[in-house]
Image (cartoon, rainbow, N blue to C red; front, side, top):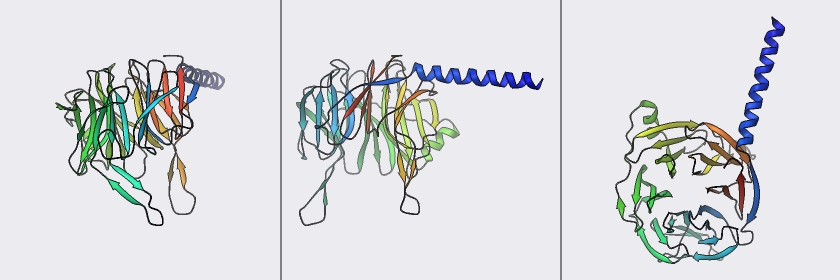
Amino acid sequence: MMKTGRLTRTVTTVAALAWIACMGAAHAARMTRTFGQGRIGAANSIAVDPITKSVYVADRSKQQVLIFDRNGRYVRKFGGLGRGPGRFLSPGDVAVDAKGQVYVTDTGSYEKKIPRRDSEYVEGPHRIERFDRRGRYLGQRIFPPYTLVRGVSASVAGGVFAVMSYDGSAYFARFDSHLRSLPAPRVRWSSEDVKAIQNSQGYWFTALWNMKLNRLAAAQTPSGSVLNVEIVHMSVQGKIVKHTILHVEGSIVAIAADAKGHIYIAERVQEIYEVGPRPERRGRNGVLIYDQSLRQIGSFSTNAPTALAVDAGNTYIAGEDAVHVFHAANR
């Protein structure tokens, strides 16, 4: 009996390991190319044009957006330092909608270096600027003082969804392709575990529109030590569909979704400064993949990521000074 039990446990263990190996193989990714070296200073966000497959990279160090073609060849740049139309103090997120319009958030803070003096900050209001796919300025929406843009996601019908915050409280906003306000999801907290998200010490920092499921997926990270991250699926009307707490120890820098409704989360190692000169490192550098039910189905390692985008067959991982393209066989 003992031998039979031991054999049963061994077979079960082997079967489990085989299943995990198959799961990882099904979602394995291999890096196919790298581009942007020598042109990107510090990538803050990345987006792919759904029609042309051109890649847009928001560079916070040079206050500009760079455009690359589908093969990674440099095309042009637009923006530059400034408060005026078509310029940025600090470009945040970039998104491209189905009509080819490009939306760039300006978080309105630039650290100006003054020779022989301390640095000073040049500040301006948060805003969303819109451009055509060639980078020509089309218009902007400027927000009132203390109203912050946390993240944007392109809408299927054109325009963007945005995560906004004011005086410590977060909410969702929706804008058409001319950045005019549209009815936005209003979150209704219907259970105690979901209410806990509303009351937790943290903020909604990004959102994406899941075209496969026709849902809004939002991510929240607590302030301070990043130990748990909440991912919430909600309908257009704001009804909570799915809520999952992810036990991620690093920093979540971006989320994206593919045509199958899989969600990709870019995680970066975080340094936690405890007592003493050496910081503790938590988390990993890589991409976590979840299915429509927010069950993890795969992952792969990368260099320290700063941004993430996914199209029909590729995952684009922006590092500090380059973009790495991974291809997944299952897609």
